[in-house]
Image (cartoon, rainbow, N blue to C red):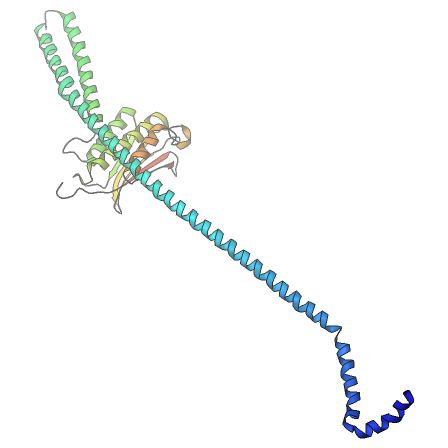
Length: 314
């Protein structure tokens, strides 16, 4: 059979010249395909690996985006909660300031009532008793030296009691009707310096007429009283300077001494109830209070209030 194939092959080639030529080409194409077949799985794996990596990166990006959205939502919620808390705190602060102002108003009204009672009742009765004792003293003049001396002592005691009543009335009603804050403050500083044996300096840039509202004037005077009281009890000072001025729409009270400084006592450091009360009063009117060491020693207290003016109709 193989012999027949060898004999018949030339005849078949002669009869089919194109097919005879194409045989080697087909044989070569088959060889190339068989050579490329081992490379196909590697390319497929590479494409699959790239696709898997892309899918993984996409999932991670999606997860990161979801986390971002969750954190952003949490942040917005926290911001909203903080805004609500700040609004509630501001409302509470306003309510607290209003309560402090009301309390201070009630306190000052009660002080005014007590001052009236002391002046109109106790003061007048003591004065009438003094007049009666003076008449009795005049009646026994030259008749009984012992009784005259006893009446003199009684009159002296009554004079001291009358001075105490006047001082109490003045403290309860610091700013008398028709008197300005500047006048009341200067009088109080001068009296304080005299009683404690201190030198003093008083500077005021306020007009003598009452321009600030009475509530602010009373608060500033009470702060002055407490500040000078601390100077007298704790500062061990020899000099006190007080200034009361208006600047940039604010009324500023400044009390400075040359004593041992704010570290010398508990009250001076601001932990005492007196300083806390001053801070509460000034804060209730939208002001502020500071307490610090002076540049050359001593203590400097500064109270600042908005310079609210009375309306013309008031």
